[in-house]
Amino acid sequence: MTATRRHGKELVSAIHEAVLAEVAEHGYAGTTYEGVATRAGTSKPVLYRRWPSKARMVLDAFLEARPGLTVPRDTGSLSGDLKAFLRNAQSMMERAGRQTLLSLLAELDPSAGEAVRELLFARGADILGPLLDRARRRGELGDAPLPLGIAAPALDLVRHEVLIVGALTDAKLDIIVDEIAVPLLTARSRAH
Image 1 (cartoon, rainbow, N blue to C red):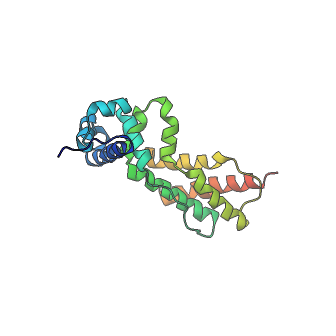
Image 2: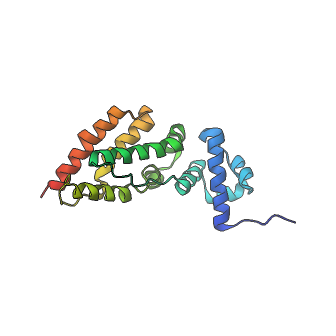
Image 3: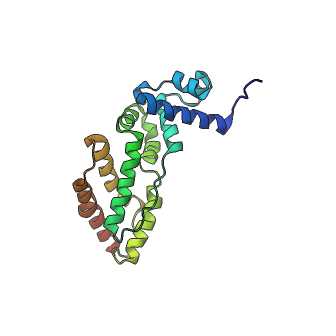
């Protein structure tokens, strides 16, 4: 009996799984089109047609399989909720791998910026909404609308600590949340 050729979503899913397995086993630098093709049971030309660069192929696999950020449980304070959210974002970046993400950022073309932001902070706005709503109900925030990107500085600082510094300490997280994010959110939400 001959093997059935896979197409469409089934093939792409197999390729994504192969990419993730290759990165986990060999690191980003050791991941090759040949290794992915062999593991996925397809050919290199199939990969090259869809992904003109290894960086794009790996990025697409990460985007598809990204461990989803979730709304953290209610800690009872905006500070606690933000710290839980940012630790979750940190964990997501660490699972992808610091060296892998740095290599990916170095190799991606400038047009991939939006996809990288999606990978690093997937669903951030969806998660922050409920956190901010809880803080409003507790009286920690005012009623003024908050712009969508208001949490970007906190996320950028976490990304910097994880990818550039190599670690996000509790002390640094306290500064990011308690001295930057919470005061910014509080002041902006009470502005009229």
